[in-house]
Length: 605
Image (cartoon, rainbow, N blue to C red; front, side):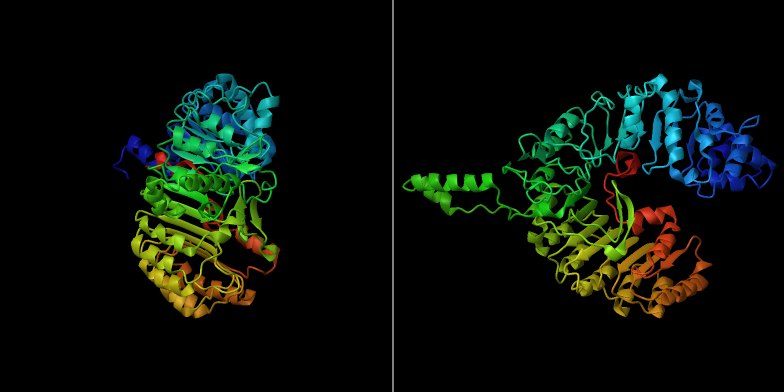
């Protein structure tokens, strides 16, 4: 290190998170000076600093400036090269509100082009947004990335100082305004994005977009590569005339033909939706969602409700068209050509087959019942829900008609890396799991929940056979009430040598301590183990103590939680909330992840 010049060390230090730089700064006086160099404050990401306190934060920013800095705005004023600001709740919970009530010198934000805000409500993050927005709104910053929760839009309506914050959006490439409600629609005056022709990432979860709104919204976004419409419940409906309509979904294929990631989770077929079915007068029967999506040849990630694979639905217009064809056929019965045509029966591919054939590059696939909620669930609208004792969900009517044979087609996606299968009722032996494991060697993340009957798990033998084939599996989440945590299962899972995280929720099952310990010792890379079963609290404590004593010291950051899923709810929540955020958000709490962050799309490549 002594032979390296200051510029070289600064180049290395810029890749370290803030908390790591603070630790390195204690080495000697040279590192103390370098770690707080202004050069390192071009980008400031404070979300992962869960150990940050007000005292440590002031100590950090004081070293960066010749003077006494006691408030955040002084720190930002100093960073004249600041181009990105990312605000999350991780940094704010130990700091007083007044620290974040500020106005920033406009000169300090002249290079700002990226702003992201936590989507979880927090008083301090709200105050930070207002303080920054008043300064940024006057500059009309040419944004490249702008992510805020939709409930801040009301502030943009009422406050003249920040209403123009998004006026300059011609260079916008990433926009996230999720977590709205079904009564709000786009485009709107607060978000003038009609000229954002370079937009590549768009997340508008939970907005009240109908089919016409979606057509209008997408008409200028030919470069769009990632789109999330999760929980946009009325996107398949045309308001006013109460018709089910595919025009909005067809607009995706028309205006964004190069789309790579698409999230349609929780968008139930309107003919099956319990809140809409009585309002639908007629339906557009000329096509289906899988048929339209299959035309997106570059698609790499897709989240789709299970009911859209139902081919047994007969709409009124479909029945009418069939009756019309019968009448025309009878009238032309004496025609030789008509007779020959009638004898030829066209083989129509299934919905799943159309998707596989049309989108050969698929890497992420989520297939779930649109009404499914996990025992540990994270939603855009409701946030984290930990309520296993009163956990209930209903199967969509269309999902009841989808057979397990449809799932075999998934095995033809040879590039598949992430697979989610949730609340699929007609699963029995689960042979499709074996075929998927044999033909999709790159799967690194597997999440399965409530497959088949809930009173007995019929696919366990198939899963035990499939797991040894998944040599690249790194993350596995299993939620099945009566799944047997047998020795055979732990042996099969132990063959996944690269497994890093495993979460199991099986409320009616019990584990044997020695089998779990043997599994953990076999999987050398395992960093997180979460067992929420039917075993007792005492058994869980014994297992945790044994694992920590055997492998905890050898594996840095080893995280283990073992607790009965139906145990004391307050204690369960306490254990879960203590988990590292990366485990909590990515494996513990069930949520859709396709097209939810910008790292899912082009900027990761």
